Amino acid sequence: MTGIDEIKALAVGMWTTFRSMFDKPITYAYPEVKRPVRTRFKGRHVLQRYDNGLERCIGCSLCAAACPADAIFVESSENTDEKRFSPGERYASTYEINFLRCIFCGYCEDACPTQAIVLGDNYELSFLARKDAIYNKDMLLVPLKAGGSSTPQKTQPGVFTRSVPEMENPKD
Image (cartoon, rainbow, N blue to C red; front, top):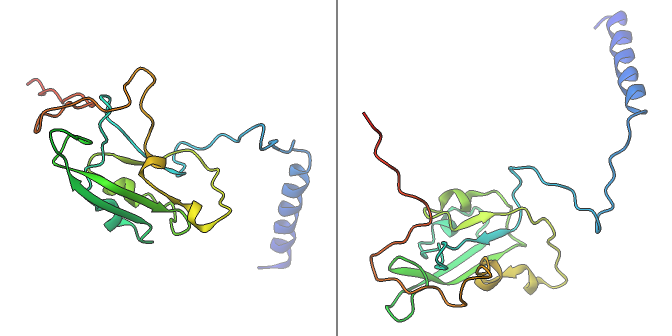
């Protein structure tokens, strides 16, 4: 660079700094006013349910396999006709996420075939003890809707009541 180019670059930098001195600062009074998050923000994990109250998680452990930090532990059990937790043959009897290990990459969300685990918009994660950072299935599951019962509706094995509408055949 020549001397003129250096002076030109210095003038542009000083002008940018001078111009930004008059911008109004953006400040949030945090506990009272929460900053809106972006649409692609990856916050605390949430386990979703179907509309009928059944859990979406089928205990396949693909999320745990995809996790690079090994922060997810899934143990699956078999559904019975008397106790049905998910529409499939299995369900996650134990589901734990260690948020001290989690790097919020979203690989678990991408690996899930039923869209059971999603990264929400909650960014308020603070822990006073290490054991408080391990969220179990009860802490992660979306609560049942106000009109719903405390137990999921009973379904017959092999009969899926999907909350997502089936795709229609395209017309030729």
